[in-house]
Length: 516
Ligand code: BES
Ligand code: MN
Ligand code: ZN
Image 1 (cartoon, helix red, strand yellow):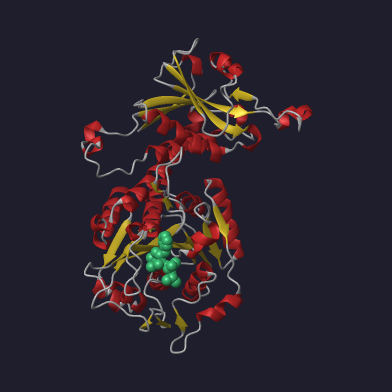
Image 2 (cartoon, rainbow, N blue to C red):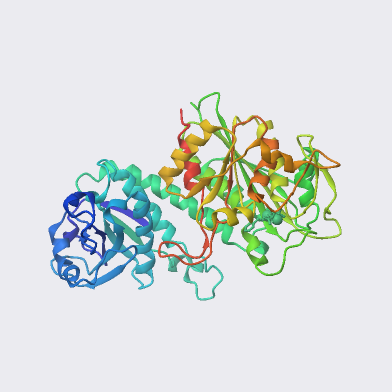
């Protein structure tokens, strides 16, 4: 997809379709007098160009357009515009409008127009609608990110899919963002948005593949290929090395599968980075989770191909970092394996000794993510990481707690949490903090070993996080449980059903925040 900035007047732009955002300005703070009285929608077209507003005037006065979120109205041969079509897309209440809304609207515009075989369009930057002046670059980024996210189509193995042939791509050809005044100053925002969004789609691409086409070995190959393209160091270690490192918890899971596991390490070590900061990103890469001997029910098991989303998120994050070049040292540790039942599989009651030396009684072989992450966290500490973040589709319990809307955040360190949250806000991803009180530690007790890997049903997401905390030890650490958010359960106006790429944007922003 080509991405362009244009500072021409929207009405003078020749394009297949001009996209403008409509907002409901009733009850808006610019209309103090009418507060509370005027509940009828008062839609406005967000463009400083009067010709664009005029073209939509009749539609607006007809009452057909209300500006409610994702409402789309397509006008052909709009009077006074050089564009062939005008697409109005609703952004909801003006007072709630932000870059996060804009990101979704751009995605919705892409999905709406692609559905009509329109492959290029121009979108008017709604400058008056932004809460603050100087938000132009944030808005440009949001539009680019949203457009790429909306362009992703998970139907890889449909026979009629045209992009199997590279010259006949099903993707959007080009998007132009129409800005007022100086486009040059927004160019870097456009490039940043592009890098982040392409990395997010790279992650979604990995997650989208079924487990027969995304084994630990293939995941490692994909990481290696990406690393060589963007200039990262990448090492891949096999089962021998995993045993040699005494990663008994990781190996305990991997031993049950005929597919060999992979320990993938990606390193980014720029010159000029702060000496005392070394970020560690640890990802859960279970390429298929059957549950092992504590096998899962058949119903819905096919979804467990996305149990490597945490790994894919960290690999995609490293890609974005390598291209954005913040001055901070970052290492990603990816633990990739299947979780299978077999004659070699670990069994409930087995005891495994983790890399840190702690012993674990395996109560449930389906609680495998925390086992592989335990050793991933220890290894990242051994490599010298001063701060750790892990991402994992770790528990069904986090879906019970937060549904499919928010990812769970756990943090052992409030300062690190504050940094993460401000990055998260910037990125416009939904996440919610859950607790790690010492009282929960009680549940980890085992009769035979230092801890059990699974406890009671209640507070299951917290239990899993408390378990991981034992291995992060005193290193400041954040755990992201993305089990409910890494996979979209249904199509949305702005994003297709399938892998979401959640957490990547927050992580990239978080890492950038440490740049020297
Ligand atoms: N991969 C699952 C968690 C999961 C559930 C991911 C739903 C995505 C959607 C994890 O390995 C798992 O099986 N967790 C168990 C733990 C339990 C056995 C203590 C769970 O949450 O049921
Ligand atoms: Mn499991
Ligand atoms: Zn799992």
